[in-house]
Image: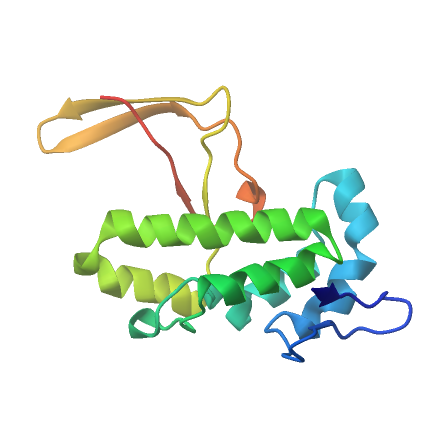
Amino acid sequence: PTLPCSSATSDVYKTQDNVERVVTPFLAQIARQAEQADTSRSIDPKLIAALKASDVMKLAATSNIGGVDASILQIGRELEAIAANCASTAWTMWNHLAVFHLFVGCLGPGQNELISGIVDRGAWVCFGAGAGSAITGVIEGDTVRLNGSGAFGSGSRYVDWGGGGFVI
């Protein structure tokens, strides 16, 4: 069970196991911008910059690529702490962490230098692949030319690396 503290009384969030979360330093800032984020569908740019500069972005990355080796349980608890303060921020952060894991799997170990750079820079990743997405690929020699657009991706406006599924 969790014990979220109101941002009016405390900016610290702990669970009954008394473990401070990686996100703890950001919870007051997350809470302050929550209403605006939910209303405008945009997270405060200063908060995005702070998150990108932190280990929060590295939760889903393993240590061999510069990550923090967080367990699924830890990631869930970090997201729980964020969600208790702002559902919009939690949703977009969840999307980044899940998509990052997918990027690593798709790119494979042969791309560790690229992946490590993404982790080191705190880069945000997202798939713009929601309803209405229509990306096609045409093979032209040794390359594939993509055409179309990805219609939606939670957190896509904060993205440094975007991905999209396509049909050849």
